[in-house]
Length: 360
Image (cartoon, rainbow, N blue to C red; front, side, top):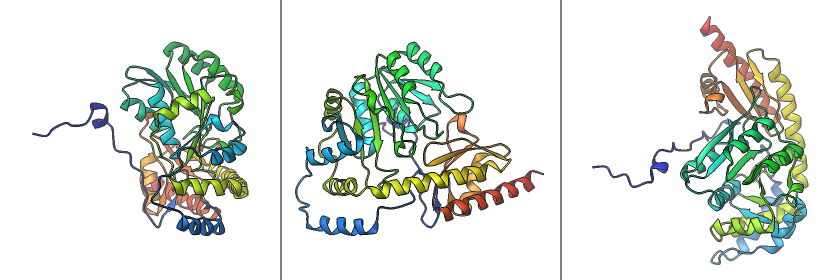
């Protein structure tokens, strides 16, 4: 007889999967298409070879936090480093959310939010975005007052829709909420809109950021959390010790000192995003939504998004589809290099023409 060893909440979760085939144009994970400078990688590789691998990494990395403080414009004692923003998100959920507590998240939204909520047996409330996939702040305020969540999480820019919450709008949410609000700013560098200045005024605000996007360090898994010193101390208690390894600490210390490449990469991505958006807007069989991030959300107006995705994949181009009912007709495409974006546009037109001939 088969034994059910796992918790019901774990056993019922679907496996997290994403296409990562080699030899493809990979536009499905919102990664930066540009790596850190090769000269910097070589220097870091050489330094890593001289370090003692037998010792645990620094537990209290004060020098690194000081450098990060200069970049983020926030006090070092209000910053927590983690293994990507997902680990920090998990620590936040463990800190503030228990069985039966209410979690408020947008619909549609980043799948990890609901995944963590289900694991912790929280009651999940959804706040619907409008028909254009934009935030409806009045509705969110009503949902906050109705649900009275222990924790609310809103990405800005929103993944996968691309919309942002203005600072004044976030302040409206904070005034309405008695629980903790997390603003997920994973794509902050592309929008430059942040709620960080509200932290001294609102003790229930946390801000999540990552080095996986604009900094081009997705393979290393590095992120950080901003909050009041009191909130950061609480979340640190839920984080496993020594989670940020010595190599990641080394890389981050150098990248923060030589981050001029980030600005260039962000500018290049934004330029390509707008060029791609204009090209997509000329295709009458799709709708493209505005974005403040490094991706675009597309709605297929005539053909199933899954069919379009499969045919793109057969031509070695990876894009993202979603299980969310509200996104069943949508694809998300990451902004790649100019050559990759041109190939995507050309191939997408071929796929839509092919599907059009089949349907007639």
